[in-house]
Image (cartoon, rainbow, N blue to C red; front, side, top):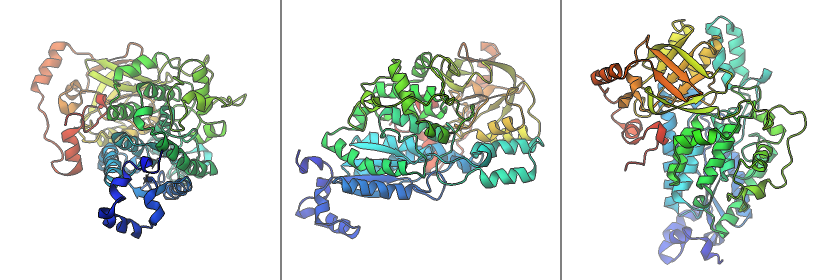
Length: 559
């Protein structure tokens, strides 16, 4: 290939006498004559002081830039937004969280599309920016790769952000003193990096590596480490190889690759948000993927990782024994993964894993295939008269496989949290939080505050929670989210009344309201759709275009 061949997009922007004004502006940001003849690599950084997940990514972006320039490209750093779930949790601001995924995808598409970048490297930390970055790269379908910002170190006594949320519930129950709560608050988040358990950030980083869109081990590195610096520098050479061979996201993000990502998510006990995000990413890539695929795949794949929130260990501890590569190698050798899938190394998944050593003897973070934590998926897709088009449960088996109880209905997350803290919620309640779906909230807030308060109050085995919203990767207990159709669209969850009997069966994959079809129909006939909560701005635009959670809550499907 010639240099011209490597510059499919940048040459349109900077070549020729008529593009002198473009070159003049780029000279002002540091371009020299030789740079105009190099492939231009957009480096999308999610650096921000908004959250510790992303506070270090400016330095990582500079490392990527150095690696890109050294490999013969011309790196161009730009920023896209990020928001913090952990900080906005339980507030009105949390409605912007899932919305930010779409804004981030739009931003990558807009900047790199506008500026004629020949390839794209993106660096993400907090969980919504990762699928957003992948969706942006998929839309443009130019040589691309993703870098994970890395996980955080634990606080003293093995604490993390979930420790703080659950301490709030413990404080309400009288089990955690004011001084103890303040101490956990002060020390649980010691520095940069994404939340430390197998919560949504680490889940998505692992899924993206299994998908083939990040370099080997990118998902399993501490945020502040030489390994993460090396990951960033090596991305420069990798992206130049992708350009040379014209390997694009559409070559990597195939149906089989998405199935690999789902399988790794299950084995690791990953977040329910992975269902939402993988559906959205597949939609963007025009790969057919639906809720029932998670059920089908889930019957074949065991849950193996004893990681928080339901387990004992943090991501930093998994890193010390080898990260997810030995797990992938084990699953590949057992015929559970498709090793023929292409990756951003230019090699297949099997080739990447060829020399990976097994986990050390005696480790108990990743269980053997013949002794799983759960013999099939913890991500259970439920259907029934309460969720005709599906709901997503996170059932590890530790909380049991069945729950029946009386509905206690709340019209918002805030109402539910208060009901938990003031002892309105009692044993055998099925908490129903509605009008929190993609359209109804809008934005589909995470219910981490209520689920953590339940655990902190010692009600984890005695109370279930269902919602048309979603959950943090840090949520655990008997929880069911993504109930569709959502309440705002007239789904049956809208007509549940306090005292109604609800049964949840993770063995038969059923969630049912114990009412006759006639009674449900009669209540639905009386239901009136509420007015939109927002009529201007990004939340209003989102509510007007977003699809159901069962379709990934994307905003460009019905245009």
